Length: 309
Length: 244
Image (cartoon, rainbow over all chains, first blue to last red; front, side, top):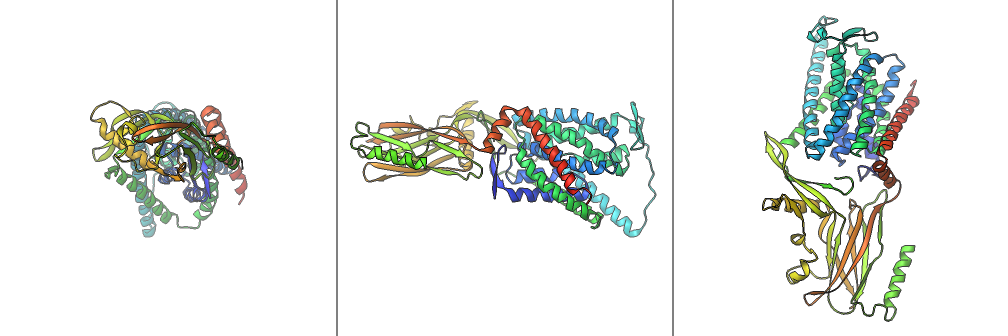
């Protein structure tokens, strides 16, 4: 059954869209990451213009983060103070990001930048994740769980403007979460992702937050950053397809429930290896596309006809 | 139903004795409005008319004009990157031809050139102008053809008897919206003896079109609503699956 998407200006199969949302939702339910980094490339692959895919994905992230954060809130796993500091950085970063996005779009470089951003982040994340989970699996097998220091003191802890974050049991410089929020906000705007896959490791390894509050707090911050991106993209570029976002959300929340329920039953490390393999495969496919000689060297962009293609 | 009535009314007018007298060419469309609704997969518009004697019919279909930027990818540090670009102005968003005879060189240039019949005769002003713009011009046409927005021949004009003709004009699913102009030319002995221009409006109607309009007119409100809908959807999802 075909459905016409009013902003993307094309007809797509409604079941396909629900399935895509569901599949990505399943992964996000299982691993606690948003899955936008997989959803955006898939949308582009099925013919949604990259600018629309990125902006619509931000709208979808709002919905999936709300349902996620409510679940974590009920378990008191959200550090609101940390979330707010991250958010200030995130709002500044994402606002700047949307304007950079518009400028790149006008210069005809947005597709390249989106692709490059995906190749580098997905490559880095996939490789790290793969390495980490393989190491954990090997360690478990040999049963040599080494002692890990509770708190590692590195140079970032010497920065000024220290703040106490009671829920996270941290006393660190506010500059650190501000900078992380800014960087992730910039990414959210340009790549249309929530950025959890950068934010979560950064919160664990750079900030040293307890794992229990990381996911809830990152989701809390992502809601507002994604809402900011949605609003600015809608005003600036008219690229938010609310209908497409709603369909992806509908598939996503159902998929996330299954993913969440299965996450306890399946071997987590093995699943993590599989996810990292998927991420690396997407990164590789995008990289090949950038380096392969295109069959058509010329591309066109239309103006003054309403929204360009 | 109303469409059928209009066609019948026009056919009756054509057949009425002396109705088209004095006019070498009379033509009209089966419909002057193509509505793109949800599930639109392209459409056919029938153009029909009559002539007062022998001759060839050429139909030129043009969509609304606008600027098009053509960019060329070049290899930079192993990556294919958009580098050089040429801007073309007054490019028709849609361009298609139909004719009763093959549009080859047996038709005089004096007929083809002024009506911009054929890709080579399309007037596309380039900035910057020059011989370097030529590959970009060709690429523009190639890209528009690949999109299905430029077509040499969308339909064959067929004569029914000596005086009545009709042509099926095919518009693809991704047809650009706006006001189209359809030129119908009657060519006789190497000259255009009669011409008629009919408008055609291709527009979106229905919920999808209303959303599109709203998103462009009241973009701030649209953005706010999109966020609210997402918040609501997330909350409903939370309620639906809570406690399971």
